Amino acid sequence: MKFKTLIENIEKRPRGYLKNESLSEFSSLLLGFSLSDHEQDEEEIRFFQDFNMFVNSYYSLNNANYSWPYVLLLNTGGNEITALKNFFTIYHEFANKNT
Image 1 (spheres, rainbow, N blue to C red):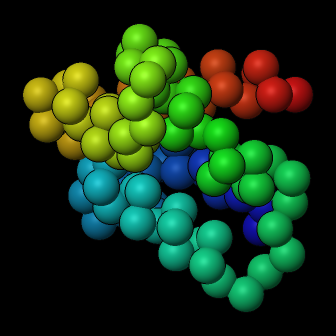
Image 2 (cartoon, rainbow, N blue to C red):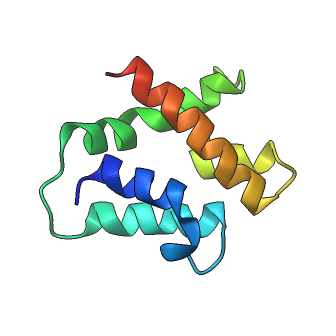
């Protein structure tokens, strides 16, 4: 399965992949997928190289390099479900700019 397809499938049916609709659980799943034995595509490589900076910039943290899960949780008051929904919104912007 391609990285982008995995994200799209989780967005459509998060409970099919995650025990809890949680950004923390989701980010762990993505990291585990990335570390698995598969051929990484360009989108996956770009995500792990550039998505942190994109999220920091999205929230006007231009001189910072916080992890994207931290920034999303910080901007939702720690609400895991809202942070996960915000991820998908920001991810689509990121993907559209890098296509």
